[in-house]
Image (cartoon, rainbow, N blue to C red; front, side):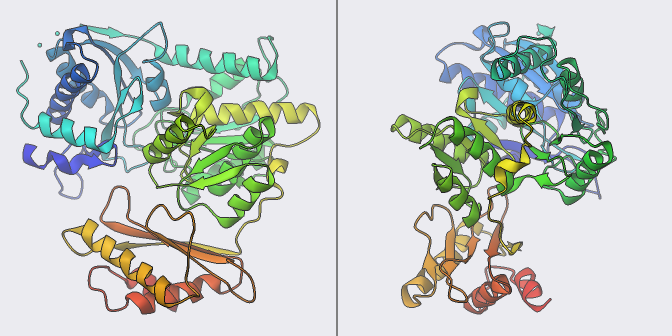
Length: 504
């Protein structure tokens, strides 16, 4: 089994099956946890030019069924490496980031045990340093070293770090609202949907600040996720929180994924604000505070969003999918003198510069709640900030499996086929900001660049996601039919989902 541990690499995280299901044996086991933790400690010691016995590493987990057992494995591996351990128990990924920043804990690194929105039988590890999450190459190095680990045994200190994290958020609320009162959110009604993940405490946090949280739901941690998948991109999850907002007459609803590094919100009418809408909303707030800034997003954002950001006095900068990719690019641009206040994906991952560029969905929604409170005092709504966001008439995502073993090479061949088409057919416009896969726009019904598709490699899997949007009725089917005709003879890609969409 150890020889297969590299299969657990998932972008810049470690993820895999942690419980038996459908006859499949788990690859992510307690042994894996012990060895990964030991290898992480050794890697972190080298990175920080110290020894493992000088390291303090915090460990936390979300509500998954295997969280406690894997946490025990992580702790055993860390203590075997002579590290001191802060046992944070049930926690969120953003809070675990802050264990490396808060003077009270001053951890050298952290391990968050989570598989985000993945099914109940999966789990994983997010390895964290004071600089944030690891790169994919770091994860490969640690997994490779873990396969060779033989554990030699040792000091664990339980700590309630969520109270420290929430106090930081509370201070931010009071500073933003310029209100030193104990209950600065008095008069605001917010519904919290934690999806039975780790974020249920957020409702009490808001209540302590004066907010009415009646109608909040699914706050108890339950790794079976009995009510809906804890995922802000899931239709059923969003429908559940939208319904709760409407039924309770709330000003706002918030929803988190399992470990709270992703989030979305719902406006006072029960309309979801996620994906492009969420990016537009926080962009408007940031650009209203300071015009001329650059908003870094992933590659699948809409043309309407780019126009919206420009109208608010900003620059839209599309980059590669993957939260670590957009964060790294925003940091790089800031270092070059280009002011970027946020790196955000359509999935709900968001990292603000003012918050150490940490991937923190809970910080994002708290920032939005502050804005909602300010606007309510003025008789305005939060959702009205994005009234001018132009949204596509049609949109779709189609995912196609790559059939060849060397899926990276096969995927690149498909992309190059499309790039070649742009050289021979002037109606296929390659996007000027094409930084991932291939983004092609078309001029339909006398318009200009009013329909587009993007085909790229998945961050984690041997899959090519295809996103398409059109401002013209029938535009998506027109484009995807053209794409199908171009790729029809390829054997590297399972085109059946694309064909099905065209024929339906």
